[in-house]
Image (cartoon, rainbow, N blue to C red; front, side, top):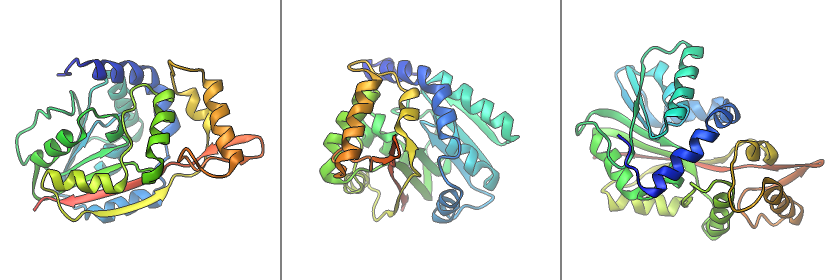
Length: 261
């Protein structure tokens, strides 16, 4: 059951409004070679049981499900789970179930899953270290804990966070890879394997179409990103560029995978 903290209320409000547009925007955002790379990184087998924490529209669970015994998607926003169920029906995937709840308290026994992952969610968590500890708890010994998320360069995280919080008030903090490594050590997860690349360029206007900013307008955000693109210095950490008259962005995405020793 959801814990109704002010931040969680903000997450549910924003993600309810974003759900349909976000699901549409992110369809195919994880390129085929990246999905294959993730499966290889995790060393998936047909016996694996997967938990996707803060699953949103279910992309990670649905990507992995055909290669494992079963998968479970877990999210705090009912509208996101509705999008996940719709995607599941379109794809004809039968070995996934969806559970509503807060990532700060996973309602599963210790050692329940052989793979515990979370995609594009850690930058929303109020207590990310606690969530990672919970992910470790429900992972079996010898199993894999994996986080996929945006990882701005360390010197650009402050500017990145400021811009993202303006666009999406439920944004918290985008962690650098160094921060994720330190977070893992703090909960007893050591020596991760990390892979980083950039998403394909996407029009920033399309990102804004799925957004519901409160402190400024979408037009103002587009102007800020255009200025960064035209300046050519990537001050905001989005790899903003001009494609003719269109402002495009590329998100630095990392996969950080640990084995629970």
